[in-house]
Image 1 (spheres, helix red, strand yellow):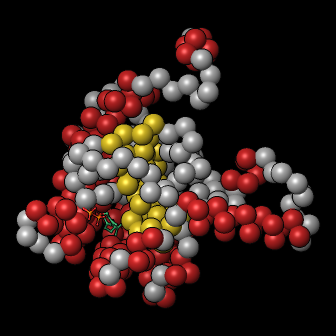
Image 2 (spheres, helix red, strand yellow):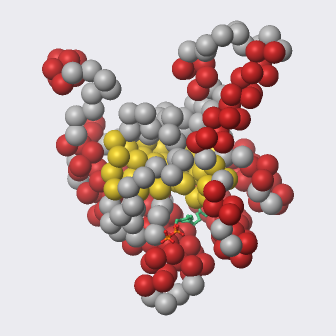
Length: 257
Ligand code: FPP
């Protein structure tokens, strides 16, 4: 993989100030991509990992500072055991082979989700990779593993209640910033743009709280086919939207002056 700075094609197609700081991806369609080619679902996921690597490089070259990838949901645990095992193997290989690239390109790895469920060696490898890259600050790759928003919220609520019991947090309704520190995404800015591939239009328990004001973008490309041009198209649509955060259009335009 060439150094990010060596790449020539870094034009996101929109002005730099309109490039979203954080883009989250629901990577859907690996199975259908494989089925259409008479391949196994596993081969679709393997091709999906290539798209992960290409998309991360492209996004960082475009100036996006944080990307989050929904790699494995708590609900995915109910897939056939051989598919779950295959996804875990891909993850094992991904962490092993991709960590040196992350280090070389100074990309910080963060993981969200309940790691306690992961096979022991993978949990360890993931924690090691997170620790190895924790001092990088410019670019962050967040991988959601055994993640769902409802599970994250319940774990955060339990941790908050524990802190109240121990006297480490005030009783009563916390403000959002305080509670957000108990979420897996603590310290990570909310996504500005959430992209789901494969034509499906739903959030599937992904970053529900963090996406309160995210722009949603759905495209037909199956994840293994998702390309730099698809990302450019998503960014163009994002840049054309007016984000109001509950205010009126007039207020927003006045603030921009
Ligand atoms: C959804 O496609 C995709 C997943 C459930 C897994 C996503 C995983 C990867 C892209 C590879 C692993 C990622 C990393 C970071 C190592 P689907 O299987 O639901 O597709 P379908 O809807 O067409 O059946």
